[in-house]
Each structure stands twice: as C-alpha cells, then as structure tokens.
Image 1 (cartoon, rainbow, N blue to C red):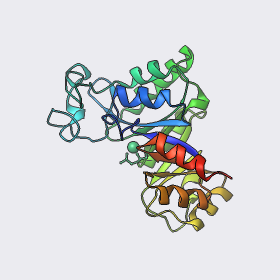
Image 2 (cartoon, protein in one colour):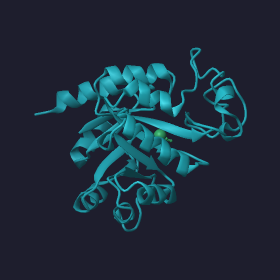
Image 3 (tube, helix red, strand yellow):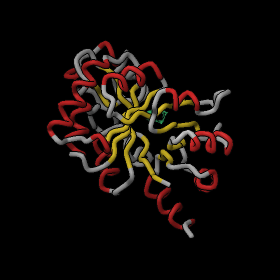
Image 4 (cartoon, rainbow, N blue to C red):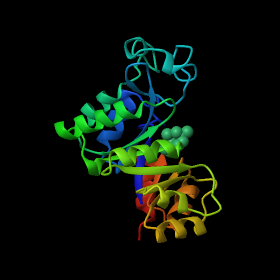
Length: 233
Ligand code: G3P
Ligand code: MG
C-alpha cells in the first residue's frame, strides 16, 4: 500500500509549506499530496479558499496576487508556496498529487503542466491531479489526455466507482470514514487505484490494508509507513 504525505508532512510542519514538502521529499515516500488554490495571477499551495485558518492574512485567496500572498506567514514564518516552487523543489523526484480546490483557471494550469513536462521538472508518470470538482477533471483530461486524474469523493455513490471510470480516471480517492470493501472491489474491477484520506491511526491503517487499498494519505507519513511495514508478512 502506497503512503502519500497529506499536505506535505503536515503532522510535523505547517501544512502545504516548504518545510512540510521538503520533509516529505526526504522521506522517500510514494507521493506527496498538496492543495492548490488560484490567486489572481498564479497558483498557490493552500488548502482553504480563505486565508484566515492557516495564515496571518484575512480574505479570499482568489482576490490577491501571488506577490501579496507570499508576504503572509503560513506558520513558523513560512510563505505560501507557488505551484512552480513545488515543481522546482521536487524536480520530478516523487509523485505529486495536486488537489485542485476552487476558482480555477484551468487553461493556464494546463499550460504550466505542459511547460514543466518540456523542462523535465515533472513527468506524465509523476503527476496525479485530483479534485472533488469532477467537471474540472473532465475538462483537464480532454485537454491533456496523458494526465492521470484522481476523482475525489467524500461519500459512496449509488453506482460505486462508476463515476470515476466514466471520467477515465486513474484513481478514486475516498474519505476513510465511508470506504467499504464493496466499494474497493467495485473500483478495482473497473481498473481504478483506490486511495483513502486522511489515515493516521494504526487501526485505520490496518483496516485500509485489509480492504486492499492501493494507498493512503496521512499527516504522519514516517509513522504510518513504519507501522505499515511492521504489518507486512
Ligand atoms: O486529497 C485528499 C484529501 O486531501 C482531500 O481532502 O480537505 O484534506 O483536501 P482535504
Ligand atoms: Mg487535499
């Protein structure tokens, strides 16, 4: 089962910041998940649409430019990173799961992915774009047929993972509190990888493994990975 750092190694460092990302990169994990919001002129690594919870700023991320946003404190004196910084720090080393949040200008985002593919800072294999907004995913898959997309859901739909197969997704990412064996079996029959968020407790890690999941998102990747390895037979 793969281990993804959720919002970087966010159990130990401020979420979606450089320190959380570099720590996760150094751990040699299967992947790193970050959240992306649009500023007026760039894409930023921040979970909420509003600045208030994770920074010393106030207001909506989408109403400020990147230069203004990068002056804010996102915890321990760190900045809100730009998406391009993530690509440069990673330099195609680890799989990046980019979770698109709100108010997205998808055309510019697609252009940025293409520029980084050409530069070698990312590769088709090492990028997985996910979203709860399946219209965004559908648009991106049409624009970039090579792109791996992950369909997020916080619930179990009536037709199980059909929605993700219909999107031609690579994976389906489910809230751990709702996931069950029937869903996992259905998704696998449809050729999808199945990941759960956010899995930190040992009993949940063991349960996800028993369900046959392909991966978990965790805030404590080192501990989760060590526990997972201790379960291996
Ligand atoms: O991408 C998995 C997980 O991060 C989705 O929920 O709210 O933590 O972004 P959230
Ligand atoms: Mg997320």
